[in-house]
Image (cartoon, rainbow, N blue to C red):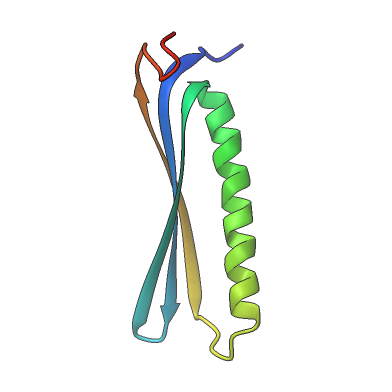
Length: 89
């Protein structure tokens, strides 16, 4: 079954919560675009971006003398459908 193609704006937010003893640090990054998309494609994109985000944080803490107790990663995808996108279609 094919997913329905939609048109609109998409924002993918990646969040990492780093626990070091009793301290908690939160990091987040956003990726956004306007265009056509399907839920299936967004799901695949979110998974791949999360893998890259995890690798990025692991590399940063690899060189750090302080090792976190735990890191929790989350991804959220928000979409806003609209018929008119910047090119006027």
